[in-house]
Image 1 (cartoon, rainbow, N blue to C red):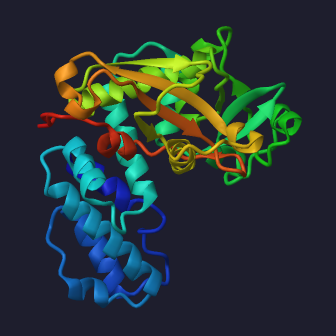
Image 2 (image 1 turned 180 degrees about the horizontal axis):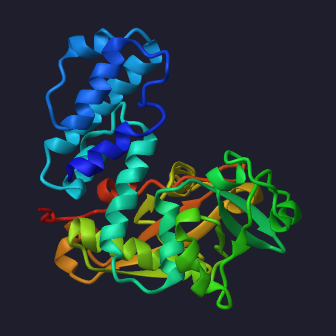
Length: 313
C-alpha cells in the first residue's frame, strides 16, 4: 500500500472539507494529505463540528489503520473477511476487491473475464430480456451521473442513463477503451460466454487469495445432486442454498432468481476437508427479488471447506 493509495480516500467528496467546514476538519484533512499514515488522536476527530464529517473520518481512520496493520491489501482483505467486516463500509470492501482483482488479472486478455470480474466489486441490476438475464452496472443505470438515457436502457426498461451495450464477440475489443466507464452489460445466460467467464474470474481470485487451484465448471442443469457443500456467492444465493440444504422445494419465482450454478473441484485433494472427500462443492449465484446482484467475494474466503491455509505475503 502506498501513500498515494491512501490519499485517494481523502479526495472523496465525503472527506473533502466543504467551504463551511470548521478549522478542526480542515486541519485534519490537510495534515493527512501531507502524511496519510500519521497517527490520529480521537480528540482530533471529536473536535470536528459537523456530525457527518466526524463519522466519515472515524470510518476512514479505522479502515486506514486496518490496512496499515497488514503487509498487503490482500492480507488486509482476508483479515476483514475472516474476522468480520464490522462497520467497514461496503464501498471500501468493494474498492479493495477491485484493486486485488486488478492485480490478480493483470495480463488477462479476455474482455469477458474482466467484465465478469466486475460483478465481484460493483453491484449489478439484472434485467431479463428475451429470456436472457443481463447484468448492468447499478451505479451507471441508476442515473447518478445525469447523462441522457440510451436507447438500450429504454428498450430494457432500465431506469438509468448512458450508453450501455451487451458485451458480445463483435464489440468485445471495445471493452479496453471503455472499461473504466462500466457501460457494458453482461449476458449471464447458462451456457453462454459470460456464465463461463465468471467461473474463470472466481478461479483466478481463489488462486491469488488462497493459493487454491480449482476447476470451476459452469452448470446448465443439475438434477438430484447431493448438496454436500455449497457457497452462496451473494446473500440471496446463500438463502436459496440454505433452503435446498434443508430439503425444501423451490417455487418457480425463487428458482428463477438463480443466475448461475457452478461445480468446484479441488485440483489438490489434500486441500479439501477430510469430511468432504470425494464430494462436489457447489457455488450459487442469485439475484434479489427486485433484481439486484451483490456478489460477496468474502463468502469464498470463509465458506469453502479448505483444510490447509494459504500463504499471503
